[in-house]
Amino acid sequence: KTSIENLVLFKAGPNPVNDKLLLQLNASNTKNVLYSIYNFSGQKVIEGQLKLKEGTNRVEIPVLSLPPGIYQLFSGGSQPLSFRFVKH
Image 1 (tube, one colour):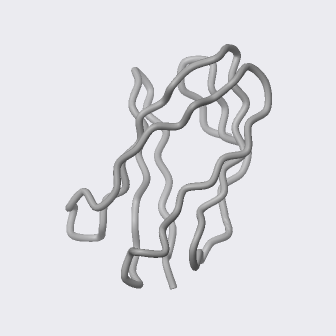
Image 2: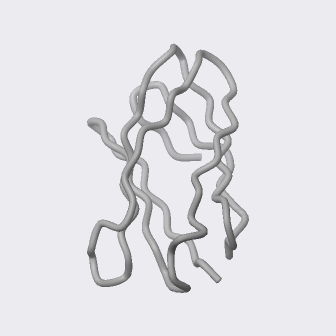
């Protein structure tokens, strides 16, 4: 579990991923959360926004366009979420 301003990430996967990264988050209120995905070289390759409602949220981030490699997802806020995943 990783927290950010009353947002808890319960699950992220699959890892490795092929086409969609699936996130399960719990939000204390309705909010928009910005995220960025960086490749192993530190270049931003995807950015977007998660529109979350209060309670449990299941969201998909499409990653089919990414070449195989190691990536890091970061989300904004005072205590950013961060996790690494592998794209096949």
